[in-house]
Image 1 (cartoon, rainbow, N blue to C red):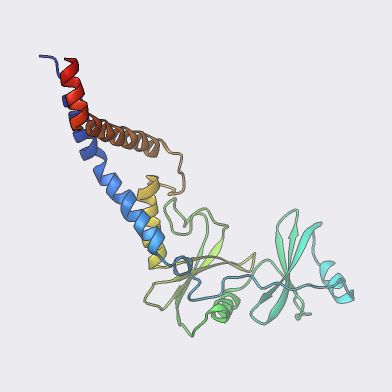
Image 2: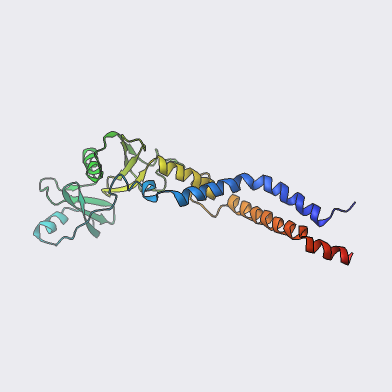
Length: 243
């Protein structure tokens, strides 16, 4: 017996609906969380000032003398404030150097020390929060699904003693806070992973799993519209008259 279009469409809609229904749920749940969440809290801005503090400097004799200590040709220079220190971030063809303007004895370095980073993070906190621990991370410590993925390395992870389990990541060579991660961000990241269906890097939105489920979702919605069309009393009456 030949099956009707109504029967075939209903079966197709039912099975596709069951198959991608869970993903539809996660898409909706993620959308609700993204739209109702405080993005400032997700990015850690409610706990600290992540904005880089810069200053303009002049090429006086003191600065010229410091720049002479840089061993490679210089590409660009940025004046930054770290704690109470005025520092020149010097980028060369071979790497980065930090020149401390108020340290004549040992002005040049390849990066901030652990002690400097601790003071740096404490100076950026909006309230007094204790530091639980610090750890140095390089490329061997960062996996594809690490919360500090695809960011400049090496980095110091500064773990704060706070209910949000906030970690502040500071790049010692850049003398810069490169990332802030907390529980709110981790929930956001998990739901974003389900949203884009990239279970490794979580940032690849053109993956084939998402493409396939998007097409199946379109088929499911279209079949639902078609079922609605076939179920309209007016359409049924017209079909009866024709037959």
